[in-house]
Length: 163
Image 1 (cartoon, rainbow, N blue to C red):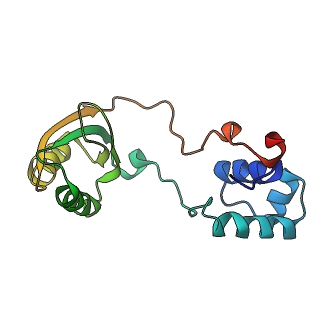
Image 2: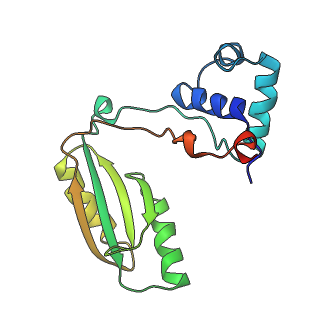
């Protein structure tokens, strides 16, 4: 059970939109004092709700114009093959996300590279060479009209809504 209230959710929402706001700016937005903001942030961080603070870069602005969502199936399953696979994927900076999934694939990866040639080279010479990989299928993004890391906080149950 989460120990959050509407102020915590408002603070989290404001941070998701702009993580660079000062405590004073957040205080104005959330209607609390800057010192209360500081205490709440510290608690949200220590509780593991806030995982970290990041800068979001636009891949295209840096020449990373190809994004692929790649489904991958392993030859063998079990603790050791999966552990080895995960360790190898951690070493590949082109793989921004890797999710274990249920369905036709075992994993779904989000890969970012400069161009189709780089994607081909990455898949053939690096991804397919990871021990245990049996099958790889990629869907290449043509355009993206929505990108967000903001969680839908309206689903979160607070202390007030539990009553």
